[in-house]
Image 1 (cartoon, rainbow, N blue to C red):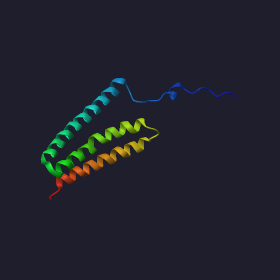
Image 2: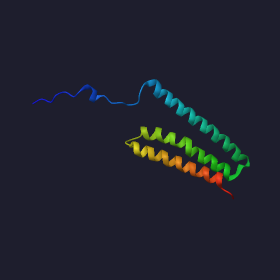
Image 3: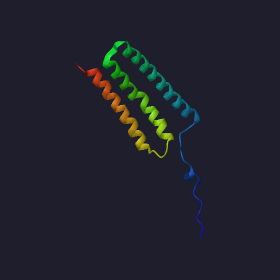
Image 4: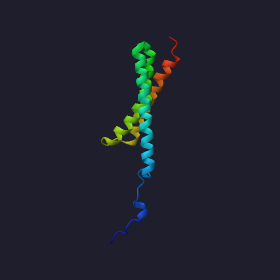
Length: 110
């Protein structure tokens, strides 16, 4: 008894999209990362000039909110068997920590 061949449409898998859309998305993420690092560098210079703990808090919060999630997604996608859920959880945890630090700095009355 032979097994009938699978329908060709069932063998196709969607993995991304058109090359132009994928490149545009990667370029946009790269630009956002570079801009966030530029702002972080500016905050660092302000901190070094005597900006104090609030400036350092903004720096750390911003990097955790913008740059770290992008790096985590790229690294965890290309390293071993890391599930999509774990990648999303790691990136979201970084964003949440960054947002909490920024909000603490903004609303700190001390």
